[in-house]
Amino acid sequence: MASAESFPPSSLQADNLIHVFWDEGMLKHDTGTGVFDTGMDPGFLDVLEKHPENADRVKNMLSILKRGPISPFISWHHGRPALISELLSFHTQEYVNELIEADRNGGKEICGGTFLNPGSWDAALVAAGTALSAMKHISDGHGKIAYALVRPPGHHAQPTQADGYCFLNNAGLAVQLALDSGCRKVAVLDIDVHYGNGTAEGFYRSDRVLTISLHMNHGSWGPSHPQSGTVDELGEGEGFGYNLNIPLPNGTGDKGYGYAVQHLVVPAIEKFEPDMLVLVVGQDSSAFDPNGRQCLTMEGYRDIGRTIRGMADKYSNGRLLIVQEGGYHVTYAAYSLHATLEGVLNVSEPLLSDPIAYYPEDESFPTKVIEAIKKYQKETVPFLKDA
Image (cartoon, rainbow, N blue to C red; front, side, top):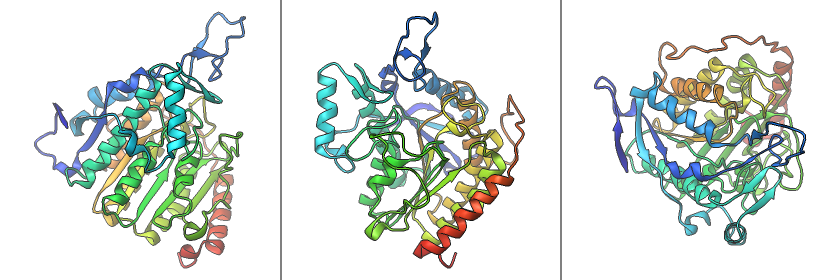
């Protein structure tokens, strides 16, 4: 349902707008305070910080889209809670029942740093439903580009378990809806600094979904995240070769990410020829994020957005869904989002300058790593052997 808060300039065409889906119900997820994301009070600190995945981060994303230079290009739409039945397209009934029971009992820490508190389950349902509404808006032909501004994030949530601040896989649910709505093939590019293991797991045995994840080389972090994100996790059965992991060395910046996109992501999407693209965005790959060790700046995000828009124009008739994930520097995450969407809009000049502007980068080592990944993929992945 479109809100009255929509300000497209008369000179813009409808497909040059970004349709943003949002609902304030997602602010009800209160992750608390403590030492980083532990929820622990050691007793000797006067100031306990908010959990990284707190409401302030998305409040700034919301406000920069409403009042920043990009605002004339935004059309606003309301989100909605997902139905329990809709969740079962990606998640198992047993897992959903576990979350419902935890909520009924007042909440609990589901896994490390992932707190289901009072209000969290309702917020998770709204996040899932909002992502579904954004995809349906595209599938029904009402717009070409939609952005689901959602929290809690979702890309670590696997069909059977929560992980990494995530309860329900918002992007995975949207991808499955696209397939159920007639899409032949969907390509997913995840640029969050952490491996999109949940989305990958959901489509690990499918050749209809190409999942590509650019992430720092962090490996597994325990039972909730058994996947390592390494290059050899390629999918299984019919899905072999359709999960492409690109673990980048710590400190990879704009040039390194750009090299990976041009030499690994673009050729894979060109060979796959999807009729729907999904960009999973996390601004925790920025140079200033507390949860990541990469060095993207606004210009790097802008370039990625521009490249993916070009892929969408070429292969999916301009249809592109963007789903929000991480990004924990309360200010710079909002600026990086703005830059990403500028790239998606393919604006000729930046609309917003970078408040930090410059971060030194040595791309020589990331380039060597990317070339090694390229060689491995061409030798191992059947559909890339002639790429």
